[in-house]
Length: 366
View (tube, rainbow, N blue to C red):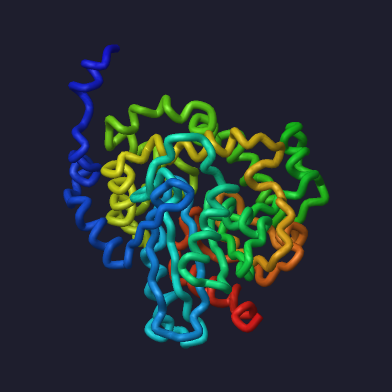
């Protein structure tokens, strides 16, 4: 199959997912929403980093840097900006206010695309600390899920000046004996509690049936060029991230009542399509693989600074409190939420904001 065949069949770059999937709207609307949220660019370590920066009107607001993952983007966090920066209009008090910084990961969205190896959670964590320093924040917190959790936890390990604590909605809490037993293909230990057994079953399903996308991007990201030729192909690849998220997306497109909307989903896919970041975003997996190391994505990292955990039931795994207590020496807060999954800020912005306020409350006067 030659390049000419691919060229004839490929969708033009302006044939965005919305048009192909039956809901035509231009990227300018997405870009406009981002720009209205005060988008900024800084060059950090030779790469153009795009981020949203919204300051609260409340003088004692706590700065927070919130990091997305894959297949997410800054689109995930747009719903939480106003409730965090303007809490008095959303059921909170002035004491709940945050200054919000939401960067696009390298190779994602409007950030630059790395042209050489070296951008991974370790270097991104240092870049985010540099960004917060440049913005003049001497005391701040960090939040993330998916890659955002990896970056936030690595920031916690690096302990840059000013970082008070982190919050996670996809925590790394799997005890070493559990990780080893799963790697050996053993049966779940009989001593597991009900919550721990549920987490085991979720992880077992993911490792056996849900990890294919990550393996491909970690080993052969450039092979995914076809994602840049087909908006429908890109949409299918992104929608198949994890089983529970795919079920949610199906419900939304079938007309179900969810906080997440068709517009939300199509905006996110459109951002990937028209910024041509399907492959550049995948390279984050490859770059991280080059670091080596034996730890898994969900394995305990040994974070020593304060941590707040949001445990959503439809995440890849819902971290049990017992595991969180072992993983984080200074566990500020643990809450097991009744609804929500991998894209927590997108799917359940109200509980996400409530948890962020509660999780960091004690650090405001620290």
